[in-house]
Length: 237
Image (cartoon, rainbow, N blue to C red; front, side):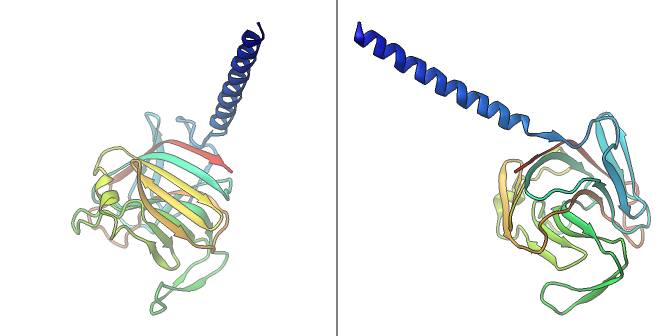
C-alpha cells in the first residue's frame, strides 16, 4: 500500500513539473508581439527618401524610386534587447536591410568610415545605426545577407566573406527568414535558420526598427524594383 502511495506521489510530482514547464513555455511564447497587423502601417513612420511603402495582400511592399536617398519604414517605438523575426523577399537588383537600434542624426554630422580614411557628412534626419543587410548582389556573387552594416556611419562591421554556409542559405527572389537577436553589446543573426554573424559592439543600446529601400542618385536598374516583408514579430527580454 505504501509503495502504491509513493508511486502515486511521484506521478503527481512529475505531472506538476510537466504542467509548470508547459505553462512556462506558453507564457514565453505569448511574449511575442506582432509589429505588423497585415492590413495597415499602424505603428510605423517613413524616414529618409521617397520610396513608397504600402500594404498588399498581407505584405509590406517597398518600391524603389528612380532617384532617392535611402528610405526607411521605422517603428515609432524603440527597442533595446530583443529577438526579432521576419520574412522578406527582394528583387535581384534591389539592396535592402533591416535597421535595429536605429536613430537619426539631430544635426548635420561628419562621420569617419571604418579604417579612418574616409569621411562623409550627413544631413540632419539621416537614419543611422546597425543594419542587418539584405544583400542579393548576384553580379558580384557576394550574397552577404545577414551581415551587419553600420548605416551612415562606419560601414561594414561583420560581413559573410568567411561564412559560405550562410551565403548559400539565402534564396534569391524567394521568401527568406531572418532571426535577429540583440542582447547588451552582442548582436546575432540567422538567415533561414543558419547562423550568419555574431557582433560585439557597444555603440548603440536602443533605437527603432526600420525596413529599408536602398537609395540611388540615378537610375541603375533599381527603379520600380520591390522588397516585401511579412510575419514581423518581436520578443523583448
